[in-house]
Length: 362
Ligand code: NAD
Ligand code: MN
Image (cartoon, rainbow, N blue to C red; front, side):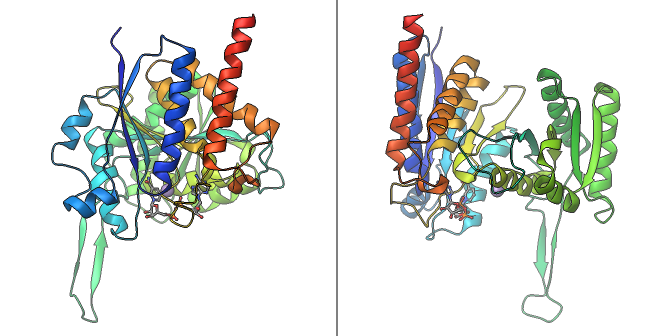
């Protein structure tokens, strides 16, 4: 068949460092399995690019990306460029243009990784964060500059179709993986327009399409406490853009931190390319030191491969990561070791190579 085309955007800071390891893992996989026909194109869109060209990416960037099957993204963020510029000129246009309305984040306790929670064993749930509308809007404004009555309005935009689609995606996942419960994050007691609307349409979709699933709606402030107190209770969590963002960083923290957490920005209809990226940012505090953990980026590659129809390759990568963590010999600083980014990437590649030997022996 035709080779799969992946657009690679390493970005800034540790994004570049961890992306190099993900690409190394991809070529290791391809050595093992010649049926994995993938071509990658690296795009240098980043803060460096902005300093040179005055924009994060060229005018025709989205048209270019549209021709790819998927996008593997690193991270962006640089002191020389305001964070709202990097986000609104690069990540947001991609998410919005390609209708990547699902932000999928698995939260899974890993072998050999200590949770900061005393009761942190056996955590295994997923978060479906609404990724295209909600609280993250550029609707609003500011008036009466520099006067005592100076004020701002920031609008939340929720559409019925937007809510239905994210909740349906969560339900579809629950059915596919035999889950029984959907937890919805809400705040309809205080945010009475948008969150009541969210609750109403969440309930409707469950009733119409997935009556066998249990729906629990929990106020966001209580829910963050439950994430800490009884994280094993959750199976599939669905949340608006802002609530989902906060929940997924917390989710990441209770299973060992940002260095391990992947995410997928999905267009479930596969009408447009989906984008896969670590939850973490460009980590300026450790950038350039070669000590960032590449697992979140490598796992994001695994999610990408699952999405484009190679769940076997996804499983292989996740197994290799779990084996390296179980052995516990190679660990980066964020998970209590001293290994470099490159050493961690090498260890995962080595595991993949070892699996090849096992497969041959059989
Ligand atoms: P961050 O995720 O970059 O860093 C938070 C902390 O986690 C830091 O102490 C960092 O060293 C650590 N960390 C993150 N990833 C790690 C890894 N792979 N290995 C080891 N340690 C890791 O978040 P921040 O400090 O809030 O933001 C820094 C910059 O990144 C900002 O410019 C922000 O806008 C940007 N950012 C970008 C994205 C994205 O590209 N999607 C996401 C979040 C933040
Ligand atoms: Mn976040």
